[in-house]
Image: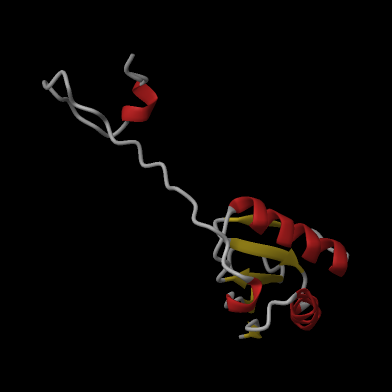
Length: 114
């Protein structure tokens, strides 16, 4: 049986071909790269945050589960709040040096502060 849910076809006009299959753009996650080979960038960001300062960690290559686990580790070690989404980790406050120390202790050797 075909999956004919209309929500998956938003943005597609019309097809008269009965054998036409709609493309669902499900992105598949790749495997997580080893900690030693990850190139994480730590920077300070205050754009679109109403003047609040956050530490932004970008450059993570891996699954969402591993990203969430790393985010949770950083938040607990630093004692702050934050979130992980779209391959970025957001940690509240200007704690770049502390985040770098935690990452280096965990084995992320190519991490650097921008």
